[in-house]
Image 1 (tube, chains in turn green, brown):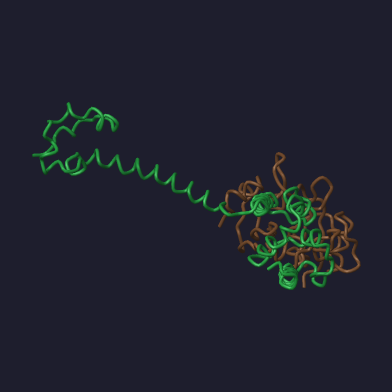
Image 2 (cartoon, helix red, strand yellow; image 1 turned 90 degrees about the horizontal axis):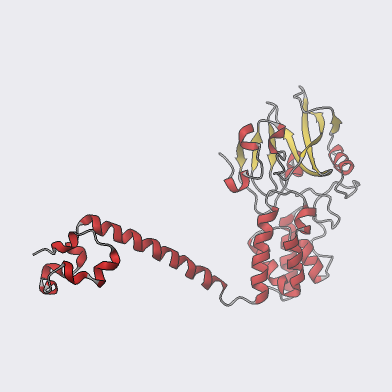
Length: 168
Length: 152
């Protein structure tokens, strides 16, 4: 015997709280009523999954964000934050002057020695104009000076320097 | 193909002027617009005082119009009057914002222009004004002067 009571258009919350008056008292004894989904009209079922999936999607993405920051030192957090802002702000700029004068870039220099391995990791991933910051922090003006404008060669020179000095 | 909207927004005249992406971005900062206009796709040209960018030998490392003129003179360009197509010559346009050089574009034989947008994509744009600042929005300012050299 189907549970026809669920054909009503009642809202979600009322289904569990004041359901007794809309179905008979022995509803649970009926094998046809084992689960409400099996007996509910299809229109009713279709609404429920879409509502729940959206909510779960939001919760899941929040968990990913929070776990990505776990275990980072204060310097790493600062570096990631300022590096992302720096890249976003320099955009399609060709001017090395603006790129290395950007406030986020200067704040990364302010992090000091702790930023060196982080910058070198970035360089290993992809060359970018990190060289002024590396020179400023390390106080070493000799690295990569033979190939101005060739950021791949300059990055390779700094990575080698990092290995020699135990930063990588 | 168009730029991503997050990038196109920095060039308010680009879409209405007409353009096309010609090659992918170079996130490794391999070359920039100044190099691209000089047909160099291996170096980042810039006269920064720290000496990180490539700049032709003997030219002052100053972000000033004269330094850019001298830099392009080393590869055969001379200042000219305008950006109109001239048979037998190739032309470049130098842009300035607040009196400071910011960008260079190169004219193609068909009269269109090509630009490298920093580390972003190379584009071909119908007009030289397409990458200019408009309504206070934009990175490059306006075209300040043109240079030309004999096409080889």
